[in-house]
Image 1 (spheres, rainbow, N blue to C red):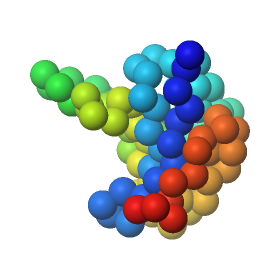
Image 2: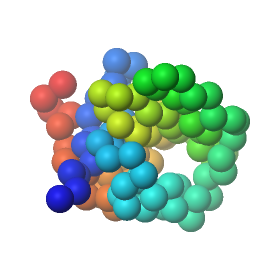
Image 3: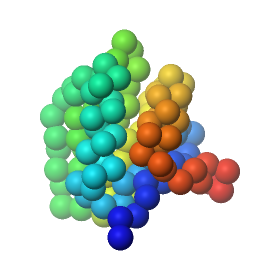
Length: 103
């Protein structure tokens, strides 16, 4: 059983989607969606013992950060208002559970 991605609000008040299972089909689908939408990978991976930063996704000044940690799994985090909107569309694509009203 694959857990569904979760859409919630991060500490920076931006939308973020967490993917509990590392390298899940939903994660791969999300990355494919971003690339198809015209985002490009930017930066290098920085991997620590229990967390890491993955390349960000950029498109015309819109930035979506990516990374992982042992608590959340892989995640995508909006870094601006338009990134919030893009992650809402992406959340629909990967059938994420919307938990924003609970945070």
